[in-house]
Length: 232
Image (tube, rainbow, N blue to C red; front, side, top):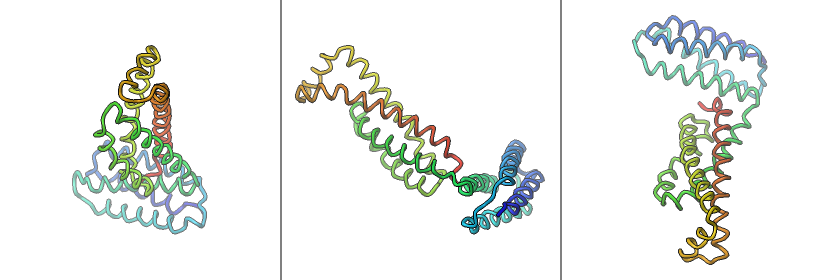
């Protein structure tokens, strides 16, 4: 089936936003511009009957929002602006469903899980146990959130990227210094109570883990960008 109903609803919504002088001009222009782009995309797609309920719900929410904007006269209505932004995200997320392009979500979750595991394993050696403990709850809640396609969960998982990059760079720097004085690095590990054979392995394992963490953190960032429209 075509998307004519949603196309018409988006058009009406754009008109009402244009009339809503109580919405700040810069935001009003941004909303209308985004809706125009989405409008063009929905004109070109065919929607499977499997998504009929989602499609009808999407259209109903748009009609309700249009009426709400039409009837509102409050200046600086932040709640209304939030509702518009949520509906725009809903339009984009539904478009991904209709096109069958939700595989990026699975890929993003996979890269996030690997980044999390490596970060939790590698960060205590340099930053103690406080840092990974602080991020344990955001990792858990973020994972639950992205599975539900929540935008707050998505942002929570992205908060891991900076500390994962920091941890990876620290290990890579350690690796460069250790390889420049390999004997000294091995001796330092042996002095901490580790056997010589294990110490020689650890000199390589840490920097190698840091390199893998760097790859997955960058991959998470890239896949996050690719899947950002999937979240509401």
